Every structure is written in structure tokens, then in C-alpha cells.
Image (cartoon, rainbow, N blue to C red):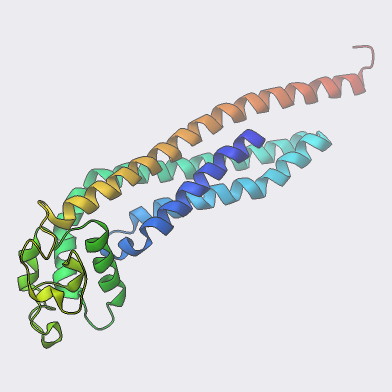
Length: 238
């Protein structure tokens, strides 16, 4: 039981870490699959802690029906973890195409727009964290709603593109002032998310498979013990 609990604490930790570390970037994604995979891992970890009490009672009381219920719960948790892992790998396969189709549009149409404050914060953090400017390059901002609006005050890129952020530093797009990265923010974000999707997939599927093997061995061991106890009670001469 403690081995299963420890493994699922790892699963839960990966899910929480993924959401905390990438929380702001989720608003830039067209699909919610990334977040769903992380939430599923957290759910699986929480369920193990809840069902752990059931498993302890089953072993202490040596009740076969209770033990069967406990292993049924673990099987359900195994399926949940497996789903999280599969979702992560499936999304990994189409991440690149989604970013190419969606990120540029999100940045140019929604940045600094009313009601899109979350996207604005996410874009600013993205450009500063990954030292990039624009979805493909800094010239992407020329066609953005923000740069063409009076609110830009003559900026050609957002201030978050600047290597050193100062008021209205986005008015000058010289390489000495702003980040000029080949491939832009799309490439940086894709590599970043892909690495974490692989971690989610590996943890979800790996822990699920390991958990099944542990459960089978525990099930056989405990049922053999219960059978021996039952035989001794019904037939003391055995």
C-alpha cells in the first residue's frame, strides 16, 4: 500500500507542478488537453489517498469483500492514470500544428484588448521567460491590433519584447533593444510544452503499469493469506 501511495504522490506532484509552472500559458492554447491531463493526474493521486483508508481496513479486518472493493478502486485509478498518459502523448503529436495555427492569431488579435487581460499577461510572460518576440518573429507585431491602435503610443512591439523593460521601450525594434530569436516564441513554447507532455505521459503510463503489477502481487498475496486463515478457522486440523 505504501509503495502505491508514494508512486501516486509523485503523480499528483507532477500534475500540480505542471499547472503551477505553466498556468499562465494555458490561455494561449486552443485545446484544453494539456490542462486536462494534469488535472487527471491530480485526481488520480487524490483518489489513492482516499481509497488508502479502505485498503488498510481490508487488510486489518481480513475481509475479502472489502479487499476486492479496494482493488477495484485501484483498477479504476490505473485507468484514470492511463488516460492521462495517453492524452498527453496524443496532444504531443499535434502540439506543433496547433501552435502554428493558433498562437499567432491569439497574440496579434487579443493582446492588450478589453477582456483579454489573461492573454496579455501570458504573452508578456512568454516573451520575457523565453526571450522571444512575436509568434514567428518580431515583425508579426506590425499587423497586430495592438500596434495599430492608439494605445500602442508609437510602439512597434510590446514592451515585453525588450531585453531591458523600460517605459515605451517597444518603440524601437533594433536587435540591440529587443529579442530577435529564430523561430520566435512558437518554437520556444513548443519545445517547452512538448518536454512536459512527455513527462506527463511517461509518469501517467509508467506509474499505471507499475501499479497494476503491484496490485496483482498484493491481491494474490492477501487472498492466499485470507484463504489460509479461512481454512484454519473452518478446519483446525488442516
